[in-house]
Image (cartoon, rainbow, N blue to C red):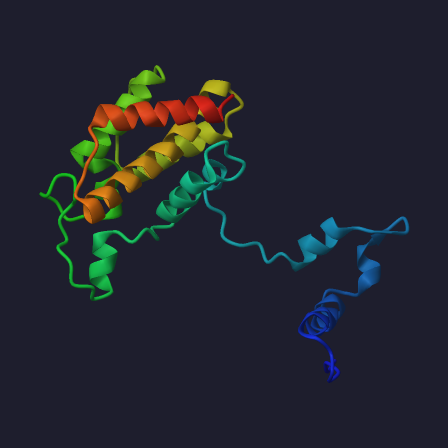
Length: 200
């Protein structure tokens, strides 16, 4: 159906939605016992996007919003790491800011580099977890399992993962832009403080 002229932009949007409603079978399909069910309409309109195993890490997390957002970007490999910047033809040195040995890419930054590896290992030890730190993908899978658990300690681990990713990213940026890098112990203390505050 054509949108009438003279409507405001918001009314035009509403008018265009009528077509979607007709395509999904009309309004009657979403009425149950005389009440419109938005959940039915949502299910009809929802295209069923790609399921990701890590969604519970960031969804409904008690971690800080900034940390959750940065972790969400990291989980989708969307952080502007040096390997990505170089692929966009930005002229920079590609070495990791922490070790200056390996190229900076997501998997190295989290947690192959000794600096981030030591931070994550120390955070886990303070939470009473002794395990070997693995690749980025394996750590994400571990955090995803913890985030689905109903145990309080597992939720602390999930928040700690998010806050650690954020803290490492902040340290990386501080090193790039300010040429300063905090000691591992200082970063770990800050992470644990935030985890304790966010889990109250």
